[in-house]
Image (tube, rainbow, N blue to C red; front, side, top):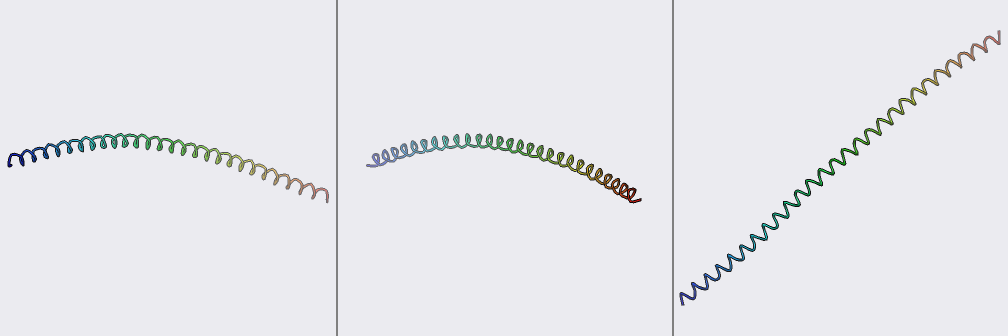
Length: 100
């Protein structure tokens, strides 16, 4: 009877060891998949950061173009205002001369 109990215990131990090995294999497979996901995540994150940097450069470039255009418009406006002031002075002088 003791031999049978020992055999049963040995059989249970063997079954438990096999189950633990299967669990270890599954866990190793899960770890490998998690490692793959980590690598993919890092790659995707790098791509997203690159895309964000490109967009920021594009935005900054567009803002610079807008600022340059605004500066050009301001210069044109200042030039025209100066011209109008000169014309106004000339008209004023002509009116004075005509009155005299």
